[in-house]
Amino acid sequence: MPHADVPPVPTRNAAAFPVDALRAEFPALAAAAPFIYFDNAAGAQAPRQVLEAVARHLLEHNVQRGGRYPKSVAVDAMIETARRRVALLLNAADPDEVAFGMNATSFIRLASVAVGQTLAAGRDGIVVTDLDHHANISAWAALERQGATLSVWRMRADLRLHVEDLLPLLSRRTRLVACTATSHALGTRTPVTAAAAAAHAAGAELFVDAVHLAPHAPIDVQAWDCDYLVCSGYKAFAPHMGFLWGKRAVLERLPTFREEFLPDAPPYKLEAGTFVYENVAGMSAAVDYLLALGARLAPGSSGRGQLLAALSGIEAYERSLSRAMLAALAAVGATVYGEADPAALEWRVPTFCFNLPGIAPAAVVRALAAADLGIRDGHLYAPRLMARLGLAPETGAVRASLVHYNTFAEIDRFQAALAGIGR
Ligand SMILES: Cc1ncc(COP(=O)(O)O)c(C=O)c1O
Image (cartoon, rainbow, N blue to C red; front, side, top):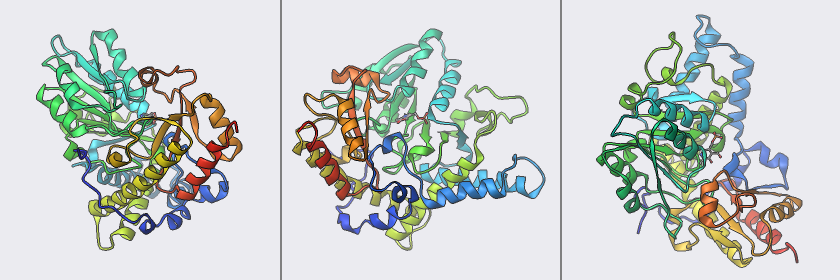
């Protein structure tokens, strides 16, 4: 069945994707060669224009915003530009629905603390999943101390979340459903549009963790009709920072902490304290990087269409990487957790969780490090998921995570390195 949230992407010739030209825009890749970076789910590299935007901010505008002199006025303007860029990335109706901060985890906590204050008798149900990063579970689970009733939307044996399993958990008591748009561990996509419709039918809200989807595919908060969404810039070709989006009306009624001098309106009511301006400038430039890719792939496109051209091109190329990764993992006899059907690639991004039979995950990752390949092992910040997979969280699994600057030649080296382990 086609993924409800993913429009079918025409099959493309992978050769048409300008991967070599794009790699040349990421100086860190050349600087690290021949090192292969397959740990992108932990943080992606940044293109030159992002590095330049950060440096330019520090060189030319490293002052506090809100002043009357030109440099400070320029910081205010940069922040507003960045809000517009991120709004374009999310297809948000209003840039003021975008708040900047340190990271996704602290925004999830901020939202959960605020939602916690709105729990009422008869409206205290919170639903989390057993697929999510623990950041989008633990903050919500902490509300149990305030009387929230927690339930868990569980994956089926296919390791996917099905909306049919969410429906029986929802009732007039449900306050909020928190789920990921894409698993950072398995690479699996989730049916967020259907989840939003189901949550709303019960009078509840949907909080989406889009951290792992952002570098791989379009986000559309209006089409999804979710209520909140969180992202990390550093997973999406920008420096370390995070942002929270919420529907204006939802954010307006959210009781957040703010100092009295901040306006009681989004985005300011979500931005207590100073965030890292240079990294917000970098986030803005990361969207510009995608726009430039869109212009290259679809000359004449503009605005959101240009962004969609970039992300559809990335999706199509990444599906061909996923196909090659699944073949490589099958060739070395790996146990792949998550969608492993090459005919169902619309359900995944190129993030692969696996084990090699009889070899400890840490040993696999050490062997690949010795072969100049960066991948990761462990519980992957998803202990509930590890429990579902029947894996001990202390050892967990191996994760190799690719983005659009990775290549087929790198996958060949990855496969050869895996094949050489213990032999
Ligand atoms: C899916 C997902 N959610 C949340 C987080 C936490 O993000 P941050 O480091 O910005 O707090 C991560 C980080 O790995 C993640 O992959």
